[in-house]
Image (tube, rainbow, N blue to C red; front, top):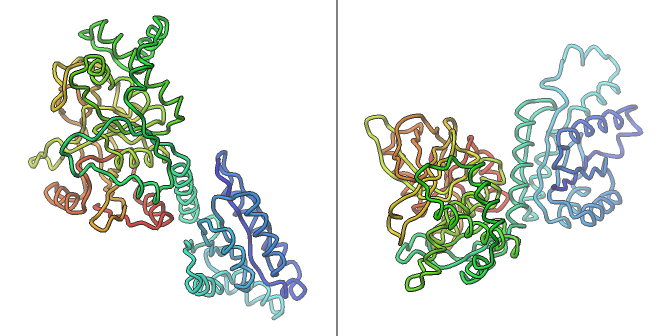
Length: 471
């Protein structure tokens, strides 16, 4: 649930001059409130702010209610002195709504009114754009970031923009509240994956919990037979368990999955980045070679997990997950210049909620580039629009986003016990891979369903970071 502060602005001098104007403008604000309210959005509406005294009252209410953002509705001309104190004290994202009541004024009807006083009142009911430059000037001079939506009430564009800003606020708040577990160590030598946790926390506001791999080991040594049976049944509900999966392997994966659940519960994690090899300790090797099924279950249950200690990418996965788009751990697999598609995938974990058909649980004789063997996930992302997202960091230490919109398309993929899919983009794949690589991501990315670049741009704007959109 997010809390949205809403207030309208107008000029109190008008109310005694033009009968019915205030009531009319309040009705427009009620329409705005209905556009904002959803099952996950609570609106704190302070009504019309038209004096410095009401501005002070509104600022107190918004701060007391701890709103996550403010929507400012321009109902008619208003003085900026009644706006600045509210925004200065709240220190939350601000969206200014410059919304006329109609698409265009019917001038024949307007001019037929005859009474110039009534005509002026009618004009003032459509005078929202008059104050937009004034507010922008004051906000810019005061160093206040803001976002502006211009349009008219009941316009699809406006409804879409408001919806996307609410989604963006939800993501920003979700990232602030997120507790990210980091367990193990980096995959040795993947210099692109190494992350600055302090900078990540500074940008996204999340907490990092550094967890010893021994915690997982301890939990795995205290699992009951009944717990194992329940977890294997869960595997069968969510996965198509391949007939070649040995009972001993299922039990081994179940034990580790149960231990993972307990680690997530203990530390109240909303995401996890991990890697470990356990060389020289058979107990640790037993755990690290049985992680993928349990990690996939967590990822599909809104606790995204990135392997190879890819902290930046689990942040990207979490963003897409909060957006309801999924967010599956991926890297580039191969290019097909004949069909202009590119394959992406990984050895897991996967986001099973965005799978095309059943998610296979299959045995693999070797984890490529990693020790041991065990069970893995075989999955294709649903056909349809997708967004690739990377959280990156540049030479100056700045954290920024890279995204691309394309489509998951049907066709043959590798059947090697990995998650892999075919993707097509609106530009040739040669140009796509060049532009994506030159933007500066790590070699991993998160893949989510739907085209989300517009929402991601709003998220980046609210976080005051850069977004590079490839296509």
